[in-house]
Length: 299
Ligand code: SF4
Image (tube, rainbow, N blue to C red; front, top):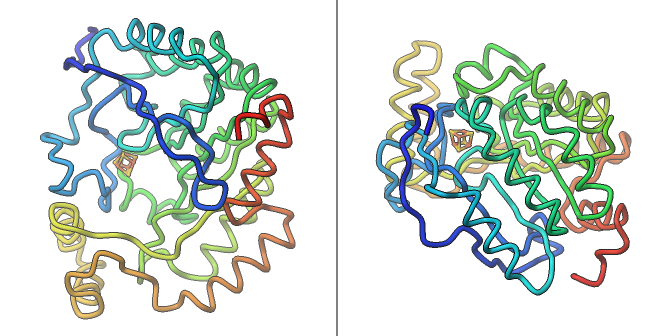
């Protein structure tokens, strides 16, 4: 298929347990692609436990759209499908292949809502179909934005769209009445965990029509992912010392929380409240559901 490798899949939609308080509303996860080319140096999907070989090479599931139509048509009730958990649905092939776009059309045809997260401005291309889905189903489109400073963003997410382009895409979706906001994760201790970055991202979210910012104030690192991250830090003299700080502060910890979490959390809540942005899942999901009362029975 157009220069991209394919791989077989038995099933596309995986049921998930819904939680109002702990994550975006979702009944199923969907990954049409495997691997991701955005190159984020902290990407958890590189962890050995997932066993994804050649993670930076994007592959697409064989017959993905045919299978998706088949699975959706056999569901007795509609629901919300979340995309992008293990690979960005807007990778560099998507512009040409339009697999994500066609999948969104199918979700709309069968009355499903959608939740997705992306680091690509290409999501703006689908503002039309996302706007149609949002008219009748629960929809939340999150832009993963971690650094307001473009130099920092380029270093930690080398192939992703620029921070400005991601915010411009957010504005385009908001204009189409799509519920959208910022997934400010991970927050990298000693790199992006500063007040200025936090305030900037909250302000830019508000200015571009976003309705929420979600932040966990840390990063997770485990075997595979940790080595890749440390090698990237080592390659740049500016970040070498920071790598040593990680080693000294976190050792082999899975959760690496910002040492400044308390102060940052206070600023975060205050600034989001001032800007009228949701900052936790309970508020965010309530706001997403309020946009389409006809789907309330699902939850
Ligand atoms: S966009 Fe997401 S899946 Fe892709 S490399 Fe970055 S963190 Fe990993």
